[in-house]
Amino acid sequence: MTNHNKPSKHYRTMVLALLTLVYGFNFIDRQIVGILAPFIQEDLGLTNTQLGLLIGLAFATFYTLVAIPLAWLADRYNRVNILSIALAVWSGFTALTGLAGNFLQIGLARMGVGIGEAGGSPPSHSIISDLYPKEERAGALGVYSMGIPLGVMTAYFATASLMGASGDEVNWRRIFIFLGLTGIALAVVVRLLLREPVRGAMEFDNHADIVQPPFAESLKSLLKIPAWWSMCFGIAFGSFVSYSFGAFQTKYLVMLDPNFDFKTLVIMLGVINGTTYAAGVYFGAKLTDIWGAKTIRAYGWLPAMAISLCLPIGVMSFWVSSVWTHLVFMTFLLLFLGIYLGPSFAIAQTLAPVNMRAMSTALFFFILNMISLGGGPTFTGWMIDVFKQGNTDITAMRYAMTVTFGMFIPSIVSFMIVARVLPNDWAAAEKRNQALAKSA
Picture (tube, one colour):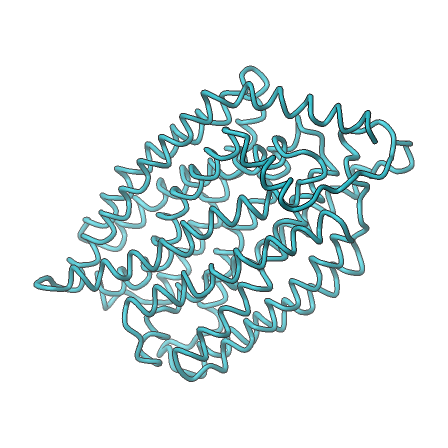
């Protein structure tokens, strides 16, 4: 590849910042339903199971299924176009969420958000991997992952600033409409500022057309990589708990202390997400780059260690007697929860052949979100309704979350398997890309 094709440091930093902002909007539109859950539930008369379906399965089913054909397109066509169109679509459906009048209507709107968001991460991961070499990829994808805590923080701040103290119907609907219109404006900015990068720019010395394999071949190739498969289950079961926690935390804290000022609560939740969770994501990615330079097994060891700490902290956070004590436990929980994102995203991109990177992300998110986003909130909402038989609402919530936190155990086991098998798979990936470069 000639030098004039290589992006400048300034340009790739701008691209990474803009893609991180887009990812933040992805999580703003996703998280806001959980934050406003008590008010949406009361206004529309939803059960806990319906609320879990709304946050989880209704969104995740379309998100995961549509991601695969969109990733197929992203491996072949202009990724910037796909990303900007996807952002406009999910933002439009976010605005429509604010117009829903019943469970069916808001469910259809969230399905639309899921369809749009399916076109977000696969092209973004692929673009970043063509701007940063594998030695810097965990760090770059870790910065991109900071869109999650920054998006969650913004969702809390938007709630505090746009919702009246009474939490009436007009205000929660206005939040969705405002966020949706802002996202559409951002889609225009993305289309105007970003350029489509050269595929394989960080692996190949000379630019050449890369042959794109059929879908069945891509699927077969990826599923033959043990570390890739184990990483998917590791992050999926970890995020199963994370999504459940985010979906029902606000509802739990309102029950724990009904007199606690709601605006103060959401501001505190936003600050914690935007600082400790972001710090966990950032330093987890950087530590992976440093430790991973000495041993590739660090990509599995570090997430396993972090999630092992999350298990007892998470359980205890739901058995304390005050909101402030819960927030202290939550601070440490989110710090350790953020650590596994950077190394996991780096594994998904580095182990995948260059011509399958968007597909790798899509399949990775298919497994991740069907288990975590589709299963987590739905499972926890159902468990709350089950435990309500003979228990108070808050006790039912505590039992349900305690069971949910147990899903960290298969996550820990999966990442330990990653640490064991990754060195061989990492070396095999380098050989595959070298062979692909020669054939190109």
